Amino acid sequence: MQRPLEAIRREQGDFIGRGVVVPALSRTKRWPFVPSVKSGDRVSGGEVIGVVAETPRIEHRVLVPPGVSGKVAEIREGSFQVTETIAALDNGTALTLIQKWPVRTPRPFRERLSPTLPFITGQRIFDLLFPVAAGGTAIVPGGFGTGKTVIEQTLAKYAQADIIVYVGCGERGNEMTEVLADFPGLVDPSSGRPLMERTVLVINTSNMPVAAREASIYTGITIAEYYRDMGYRVALMADSTSRWAEALREISSRLEEMPGEEGYPTYLATRLANFYERGGRVACLGSGDRQGSITVVSAISPPGGDFSEPVTQCSMRVAGTLWALDSDLAHRRHFPAINWKRSYSLYMASLEDYYRRMVAPDWADLRKEMMALLQQEEDLQEIVQLVGVDALQDPQRVTLELGRIFRDDFLRQHAFSEVDAACPLDKQYWMLKVIFAYQSLCRDLLKKGRAVEEIFSLPFREELGRMKEIPVLGFTDRAKELMARMDKEREREVE
Image 1 (cartoon, one colour):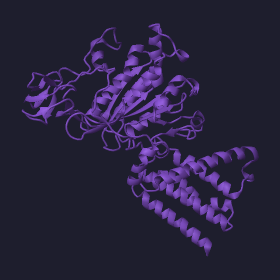
Image 2: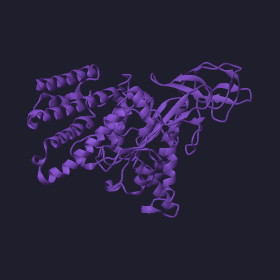
Image 3: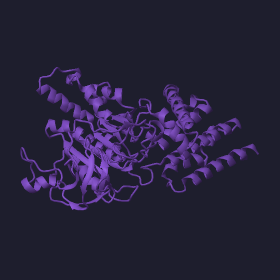
Image 4: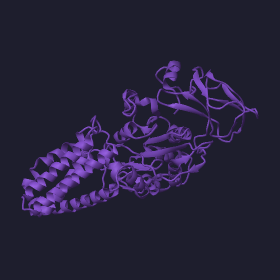
């Protein structure tokens, strides 16, 4: 909550006293400022006037506050405290390294852009089946133990974003302590540097005041907007929105407002919609074509995993993507425990052109074919439960086996595997191609009279199961080589 715990501890010890106020940013530390404009230049709100090396990874772009404009009368280079004047305009306005902004007011931008670029997560079930656009909104509802926090921490590590803002809202203290202890030790795979160099943590535990919990979400989204205005791709992880809604309910009750469904305030849906609407991909204020985005990934903790409760329902009305967690999958150790039957994405149509141009022309066709096969396998599972697998015809047994391959060997990912924790789009595509090549092989061999047990005993099935542990480097060649061996097996049968 913008309260530096170490500074408070130095002043007060291990326990925070009532009314303690310590500046969020040190007023004594000096930062090296390098100007990017000169005296006489005209600037307006959102204009970049210089940079500060905030971390070795992030260049902090110092902006003219929104609503301020004029000619630069003076600008200085050197090391400054955050409250010192670094530039002055001809109208007498002094500019400093620090900006203040009311967290409940959205920061302005020039134009909202269409969601035509994907937010690439490295998780196959998200990128392929239920993608979210850069600047879009995804909600992750699920009961206790289904993996919401692991998903958000995995996205914080592997998703393609310049800045991660992680809001721990009303979570248990030991969980947040683990985050604070683990994040500084994590390494960003894309740069090899500590993950904390691009991460902002807003922590508010369940034993803190409800007013602070209610403010934590707004604090996180405002910080995200600030970095978005610099032109960065920001990912906001809110864990969890349900705890924020509970704080709203408690504050509303103390104010003696009219309760709505399940005691939540009647304006719950409006507040949630206003929060999600602060995401998006925008053209930033100022000169040039600088663009930034905020992608909101919001975890929801419905009591008992009941998706019909108000917070989940209100979020589903405005969110573009639903990643529905399933406790049965979690109990079977299937992670990410995403129920593909309940999940959806409204961004597929707007993202198809990107996938067609940047990955492969048949990406969307393979996705539709995979979804159809999963549905067929689900229908066959109901028959198997009634009469057993031996009652199925051989082509149906092939469909059943292909569905198992997709579920266990493609959609399932190991969050702690060095190779499989993140999977780039190109590898996802070639994994799909190999699996469908195996399906074609099975059908062709069945037509030639081979027994289904003999087909499944071929080494290709085992190789498909190990495919996700093959490193990205050289994977395409390995996939093509496996498909070529399948073709040889098909030709051998013809002879």
